Length: 393
Ligand SMILES: C[S@@+](CC[C@H](N)C(=O)[O-])C[C@H]1O[C@@H](n2cnc3c(N)ncnc32)[C@H](O)[C@@H]1O
Image: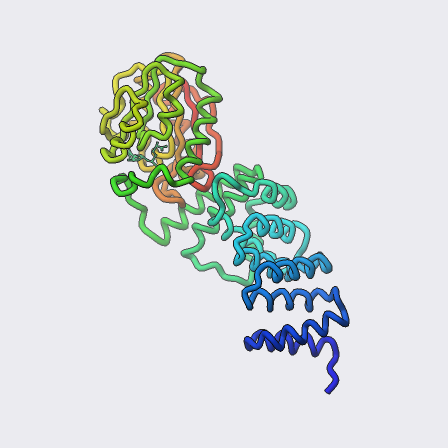
């Protein structure tokens, strides 16, 4: 019996659904012989390739389909899904950004959702900044609200337990796109969503089990690279004494050593300190709790620094005031922590541990007699966090 093109396409889709891939592929080959650039036929052929494990040819056909119908946001969204499955995360970001900015349609939230999921897989060292910038610049004012609206309008209902991850993903995208205020807002929402669905996490102070593999984790090295650039931007090339608070295995110590005559460090975990000691870069190392009044050694120091650790402490005021007292006049206190909105003041971090607001950090520094040089949002532990720089007048 003769079939129309559309009937053939419909049958191919049904064969594919039923898992009869050989017949679907034969039929699609015939249809593409009649109309080589038909977007649905091309796309379905790509889908059959993917279902039979031929990832490369599948993605290639799907891209061709999208290329022939650039306004079909449904095809772009579906290609996003395929790229995600194939692990092509930069490709996914670029396509999703393009889909969200250039087209309208109910499948766009799906693309956005996939893009957020992709942030979960993105290494801190290779963020797809360009795609995020395109996206954030393309959606104009209040990008955070617009993105949330798109998600809310989506057919996909996001389970509440996934909301922290969604907010974190948006924070990442917004930060890479340069919309830091919106990013901080999303970080605050991530913490609130987590607080609603699960109890606040413990302060995670036991690093005994983590110590042996700590340095192998690219996330930890990424945080340190960011901290080094902040320190380099503020401290003179060489000073008399530096304290590395919550120094862990001493990743930062290797960078600090040539910059100071005397280098001191402390940490709560004896196991982490054993590894720091093995580096032979610290002049003194002690076990101490940063939240206690006696943790910060006498000094005086030209700088007290702390990288990727103070999110373990809910109330930072004792540490900040103790560190301030140990600084020389003109000395710097430089640390990173998780970020939340000024409304929250301080709270649970969606990434784990505790988050602190800009207003909270400013008030704590002012009470300790420190002047604020900067509190900037930068990539911290996979997602953005605050890097604070204070100075003793
Ligand atoms: C993610 S690691 C960071 C280590 C190091 N600063 C670095 O950048 O590699 C966090 C460290 O904070 C330490 N820590 C957590 N809570 C602490 C506290 N209250 N006082 C001192 N150290 C603490 C942990 O033992 C761990 O070594």
